[in-house]
Length: 301
Image (cartoon, rainbow, N blue to C red; front, side, top):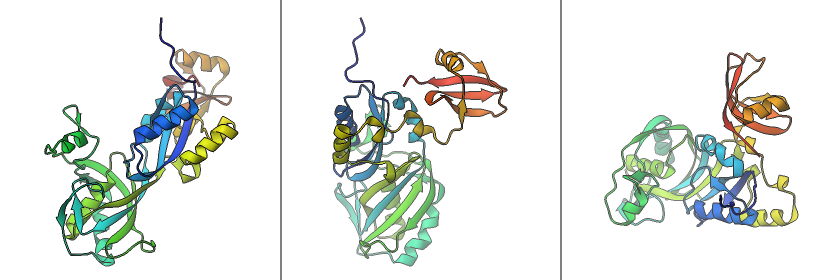
């Protein structure tokens, strides 16, 4: 007899404003316990020293996590000049120092080199697996970790001239980037190219795909809402993650056929991936070609 999964069948997205010092795994576990949800996961790790947007998928929303992981992200971050650190952030030991400090004009001249499809070496202290082991576990054990460069895409990188905490020792930036980009590596590489070394001193994620700060709750606010408001006040629908995919409406009987994995014919000329709706219910992600709709992923929320 199959074991009954603990918790309740909660489906949708919680957009958490992750606090400083908390791991993404702990954040997911905390939200899962607060809602007594059967299943939860997150769409993109935030380091403990980072704050900001952590999309948490519950129930059927976990089927759309890959779509959000692949989405564009926006970060605001501070680079402390004069020190390179083993972790490329403020947590690690100092491995190189310099008395030099870059001026604004020199920084601005450098930034275009980081925009577009570039090659980037991930930090040794990262979650990338090396022969089945996390790189950060190997690095913490004292092993030398030399991860290969890989291509990432950076859509925009700009210096924030008016940031109130800017100084010769500290510069603030915003970056819009694609999947797999390490902001810590941007800071490290800028410091090396500027000849002064550098590391990330502060990092905040402002946006992940369709989710931004307007959708986010702190843990304290979320606890207040859970005990005083209906779920639709804090829980976003499963299909919110797929807002960039065209919607296609089907009838109730057609939805049932798709739910069983069967293809259906529809009188539309559009081709490509669509999200299928039946009235207000999200039914499936499907591929449409030559008037035939084939389900790729079916949802039961």
